[in-house]
Image (cartoon, rainbow, N blue to C red; front, side):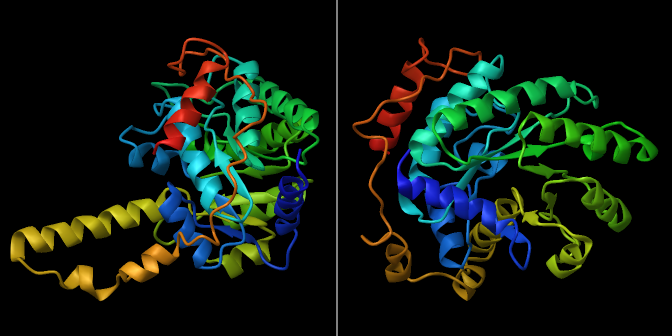
Length: 319
């Protein structure tokens, strides 16, 4: 693994121990990543929902894996900050498929992932915790093979499930500690907003706690910092806001023939071009080196273990 990527991975770990929580306004494509980086973000996280929507798919691992890789390649190409990718439940049939996906992401320059236990389709029942732990352990093995301090953020959906409020905190604790034992570096609990529950979980966990703040009325960063939170994600919230703003611009133009909403806050062409000046483009690290196969799980549309990544490379090269 090259020194530059290892340095970014080490920096990403350090950002979870800084004087304030690591704030992540999640990106969904290269342009949003550059806007967020230009605003001062110290690291870049993708939103799985936003990335899927941007490419014309619903959330929930409906985005073909080769398109996921191509989109991540474009993000890695244009930013200089550490990049972590949301891979939902890990894609593919089993832990091996997840490990293959992470191996491909590492080849692109990614230094971390979000991976979740999730809700069983068609229910409000949590997936068995052993499934997530097995995938985390496989990812840790792949990262060690690459000699990379890869950051695994384990998302636990207890607060989005049908568990009773009385049972959620304890079940979160048990699942979180099992994930840490499997190799997780951080714990992410979307839906967790109660101050007492947050403070209690922080005391229980030996790793940083990540909370979700991509909704109106979410606790502000200083309040979360006082509770011990070390990472704050906005998830798909920024894209939801951007889409709503675009809808307002379109409606005003179509209904009123006016452009006031658009004109109030927009980049000049020079400013937009400046996001992608020669200084911000990086060498494409996927060219000329060995590649990790993707596996042939049901979410891949390629025929063989290595073909999915090759297809992703070609798509990204010509995007």
